[in-house]
View 1 (cartoon, one colour):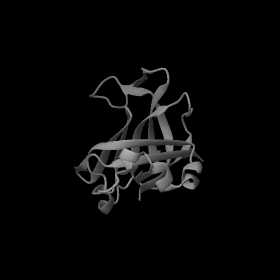
View 2: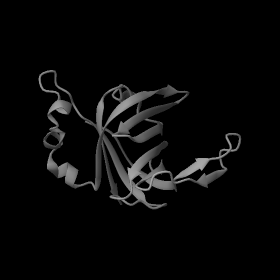
View 3: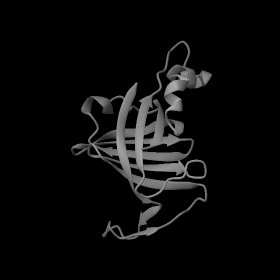
View 4: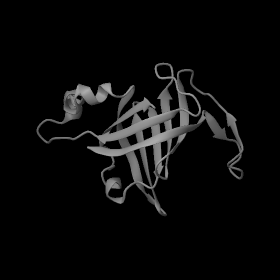
Length: 155
């Protein structure tokens, strides 16, 4: 089930705030040699994303335009997909082949704050924060411990 599909422009890579009183004051701070934290803004809606990406296998540059899709991995009481590891067959190799970077993860926090929604997920330690105007009926799908796929390709 597709939860979010949007086009994002990479605004920053490995930038952190050095003064909480001045959020625009940032410095480049690459902590891990093979992972970068990107910040991107949606082109079509009011969504923003912070995402850790293994840039050794999928290099990303500032101003890259990304097609990002987040899909929920369904679970069955009789045969949970996370136990069989068969999510590749469930989604079909065709859809996975359309994307260049695919990761499997778990939502660990989601909710609403003011008029915006937020979702935090972990993909084997690589983190994602998605926030902004998510369709109201979709935020309920991002419940804690739900399994998701994050699919990315450059456009």
